[in-house]
Image 1 (cartoon, rainbow, N blue to C red):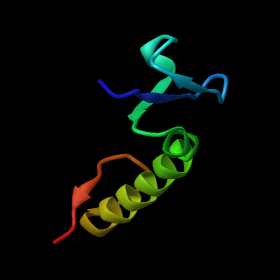
Image 2: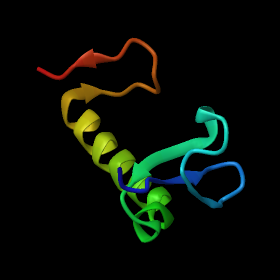
Image 3: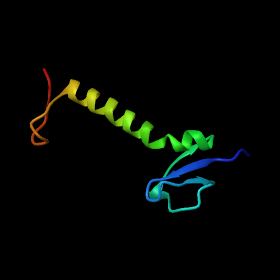
Image 4: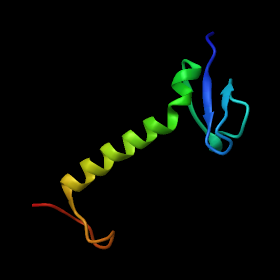
Length: 69
């Protein structure tokens, strides 16, 4: 079995094998370098999701959101 790497969002440390509580970990990643880029990947995914959401919904600040016609 290959080594898995995890990014700990609480400490910012890269863990070889999951050593901390799951609620603090992002991963698994196949390399230490991939794990080190975890927050950049999360940020990119969030931006893509925000763009996708705004294309499909009228946003009134989170209240009574309705699909665009």
